Length: 100
Image 1 (spheres, rainbow, N blue to C red):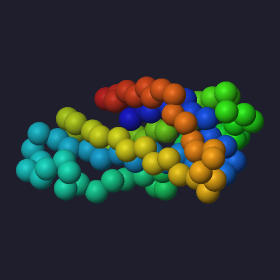
Image 2 (image 1 turned 90 degrees about the vertical axis):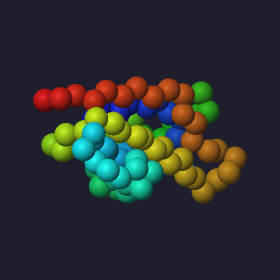
Image 3 (image 1 turned 135 degrees about the vertical axis):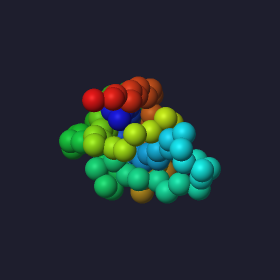
């Protein structure tokens, strides 16, 4: 899975990304599966400097490889912050599931 988001994240905020997978043979409902954080804790692949103002959006990349086979996936974006005046803003999200 390769996910890229464009977000405005102040120094008092954070964006974490989670995923869960299902395949056709799985009898469980997708909602019953546990969320798994990208990079084990939901952080981007590499650190991204905080945005300097409310108009500066930066790309955050999340990826995971070596997964078991799957036919469906879900993503969850957790937007957190300590200053309610400067919440993280998500502009767009792009994702691709590759079979390698």
